Length: 420
Image 1 (spheres, helix red, strand yellow):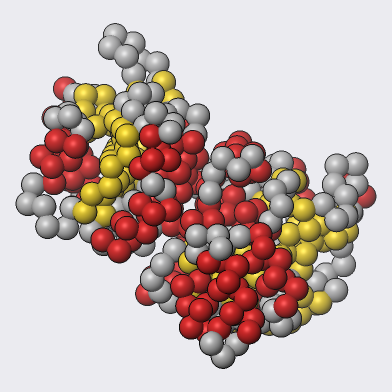
Image 2 (cartoon, rainbow, N blue to C red):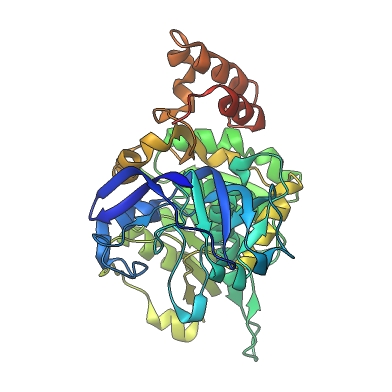
């Protein structure tokens, strides 16, 4: 079977190609990808090429299909897995396989599996590691978002606290405590606010900061303080751009106290150092943002590590349990990851979008891999719709859903967008 896919050959050398997939082996599965959301990690992969830790062979000779936030349907199942998987079943993928201690992952390390493709071959190790997951929500884009949501879930689970006099780590944020989310109105930050409100352990207060008022206003519209109040949580948004003493200002918002949990969503030295200063006794700092600079560093107060039990955690992706939790919460309608999506496009838009991702404003860029579409912001649908009825209808649909992507919009796109 032929597939069309975007493959990486070297630093920023991404090519949309059509090629033949090899014959399916007994321990493999053939699948049709429907949607993939482009992650900043793919941008970093393109920037680094062969130097990336997840690349396992010279890319020039063994190009890899990029994309690891994907969802689709199973087409054919090799006999080894026929007892467990059936054709027609919707699926999502946990790309962090942890296979035999390697960093191999779909979207980084394989020639025939990645999210930015029409058809893929899922290798045996994905099933061996229980990373091929049945997907039960009613829209494919939700499955694509399950991987980034799982990164958020994993970060919350990685937090820990202790009680005086023992060394047992109580995992998760502090129940009924105070949570600061710094630079947290980007796509992943929005997901972190949503999960803090609707996840398993609830804080009493969440303070969200950023320096972009337009992004803060959008976050407040999408996740209003009233929605948190309904869950017994005080949610506060604040722009710290022109505040001379942000530590004092944030403490005042927290009743004059420091914070039990602080998350950092941007790899900025001053932001990490601000987070350090905001930690209460036994406070946990989560460095969520993945830097591109391998030498990125910041000052950390080790006096407080010793006397105030300050500690830090960091995660890169979630595990399979995290993605299962994400899928379950989305299927129940408890999370709204659609707030992350700001752009939609087709497979033809992947290469340029991935390379320029750090320069394109907004949140998640959602790709429908069987379609040929420019990358277009949801906010621009109405303008495009003045001359194109396709975008006029998408503008009407999204406007009826608070300006957000939704199942109705996906169904319309899949039915009416041109195939690639």
